[in-house]
Length: 505
Ligand code: BES
Ligand code: MN
Ligand code: ZN
Image 1 (cartoon, rainbow, N blue to C red):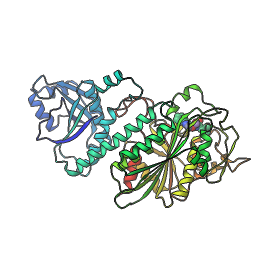
Image 2: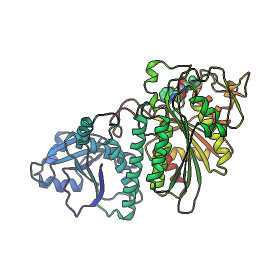
Image 3: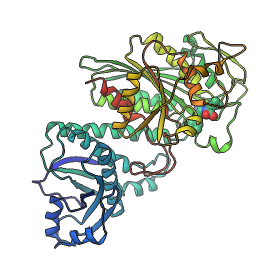
Image 4: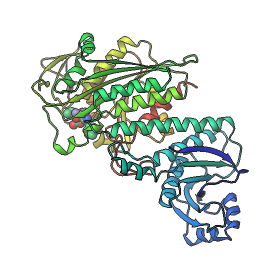
């Protein structure tokens, strides 16, 4: 657990490490760093020169105070060019945590220069909190007690943001928002990193109940089982789960704000807790990471928990299906025809295109049961084609509504999650034609992310809709300041929270 605080300079810090920013283009000591430099006899200034610091983001130099100050170490840390933005602040805080851990300092104070643009101050504070907490995250869900303890002994326990100007109430609020959002993102990471033998549909549906419980009644969870789904005709979901010994679930989370509602959002998530591909079985290597095929559902759960924690004045409905795509004597066959929730018949051209079968049912369910939605957004690790197109550092999305598309891009950008819009090209609709049924669930080799979206579009109601494909960024290869370990990123949580926020203004 990391304690976060905002302090004012008048109180001397007790942190083991004090961090001073160095800005690119003007790589000198800040006024606050100069004061510390006096205490250490000019060694900080010499360090800056010796190390030829340019202020590039992530550049770091550490000085041992050797008893000259209460703090053990001083860190000069590159920020990039001034002024601070939410992005550079997030990365800066993440790098501060990374350097503190390297220097074996568990309590950190970051000293910001005066003159933060006051309008931006809350977003910068929130970004720093998120950056610090994401950088300190490690997945320990499958480690033994000793390894867990060893790792926990390395975490940063205190992270203080020292501001020259009084942060006021909005600063304190921004700090709390950052904590709620970062906790939600790290929860989504945990759930997505858990392997399929632990994180089953039942496990995920229990999480939904837990989310409702910790929300203290702000969120209500409904969990539906196989029989319920048979009763309502969610046959797309049921078809995905047919080959699995694990019971499928559908979860509906409802958040109704205490304040007057300004909008009604529907968030739909893909929750395939393991995607072996079904009879169109995946090669072993691809299967190895298919415990993450529920990242969309994790993003919906986590975003809703944060939205409730922030008490946002928007109504949010979360719909998630939870199932495994497996092989057995009961599994769906290639060529099966399903009658979906809305009556559309679907030829299963490929059993590995399972996500869209479940999502289609939920989109149709939303259209019928949650009328007058302001928007419907689904999020899913849906296609390898999207990863081929855009790589792992951004999501692809399609939307029927330009306004919603703009909001989504902005919501993502504010949280450091990139979204690139792809077309809903109706000329490709023909690729989904079936000889026996109304539509086929695959459109052939080319433009796979688009044909997947075109398939989904048939099940959408009249509300503005966006489909977000996070197959790439959900578990990106490599690391970054806010992602110190390969594995789940929690991508989508921040964007969905910011999207909900965009309707509160
Ligand atoms: N879960 C996969 C998509 C995926 C691929 C996610 C790689 C993360 C990394 C999805 O269910 C799938 O198998 N999609 C197929 C669709 C195809 C059969 C039309 C794909 O992308 O190959
Ligand atoms: Mn699949
Ligand atoms: Zn899948």
